[in-house]
Structures are given as C-alpha cells and as structure tokens.
Length: 214
Image (cartoon, rainbow, N blue to C red):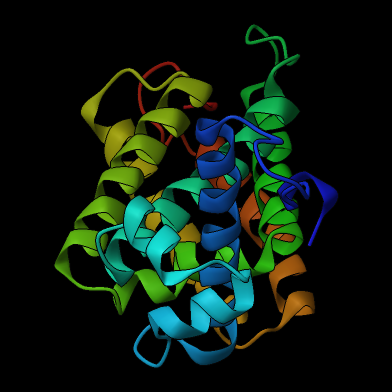
C-alpha cells in the first residue's frame, strides 16, 4: 500500500473527511485488486475489508453495497485512464496532424491500461459481471469516447461519427481479450495494429468530410 493511502497513527491526526477520503481510496483499490484475482461474482465485501484492512462499519458508512463500492472503483479507473490520455495529448497542437494526436492518445491509453492492471480489469472485464447498472455506465463511457475521438480527428458529419463509434467498439474488443487473459505482451501488440488501421481509414476518408485524402 502506498504511503498516500496509509492513515497516520493517533487520534484526531486527520479531519474526518480526509479519513473518509483515504478509506474510500483504500477500499476502491482493494476492490480492484481482489477482483483481479477472484472476479466480481466470487469477491465478497469481507474479502475487500480484509485486503483494505478497513472495518465493516467504515465500509458501510462509505458505501451502501458491494456494487456501490464497485461503481466507485470503476469511476476511479476511468479517472486514472483519462488523466493519462489527456496528459499525453494536452500539449498537442490541434492544428497539427490529427493522426499524430490519435497515436499519442492510443499509446497513452494502452500504457495506462498496463500500469493500472487491477483497475483495468474492472474497467474492461468485470464491469460486465456487475449487472445492468454497471453495463449502462460502461455504455455511457463508450459514447464519451466516441465524442473524444470525433473531436480529436475533426469529425463533422454522421459518417465520421459512425466510424468513431466503430473504432471505440473495436478498440474495446481488441484490448479486452489480452486483459482478460492477463497477457500484457498481447496488450502491447494492439497499438501498432490500431494505429496502422486508423491511418488507412483516415487516408480513405472514412472519418467523413474534410478528413483524409478523399
């Protein structure tokens, strides 16, 4: 456990809201790490409590259920991943080559998936075992990603938006398999495949009016 997630010894060392924040982070991390080993269905609240070394009383003060904790961990996974992507392209000149921006973004995304492996499994694999609420949340995230790609690539019509939506679905499918199989090398191999294919789509004008060479 990193030092940032440890609670200091002694009474009243931190204000209650800071204690709650740290305990919440510990429980989300524990949820991700236990679930990476056991899967959603087999993971119990008791497993999470033991891993996080947090009391049951504290857990239920912060979360209403296992699903509630899972959704918080899922949201944290999204924050970690998108912070990496946005950081990678933040300094990119939007007037430059859109393919260069895409390459930066997808490379940062895949590096973040590997760096945050337990959270990545929640984000890509276990979300589908957590039930309709979690799946609906994942679907909303896919729509956000579609808009993100559309903005990055300068998409301005329905054809391009459909291509972006298909790109999001294909990316998800390609990265989920190696993550589910704990195959880090397989995950790394996805980047050059995606970059080459997206460049071909771009050159063919598949992203719509004003893009590619068409």
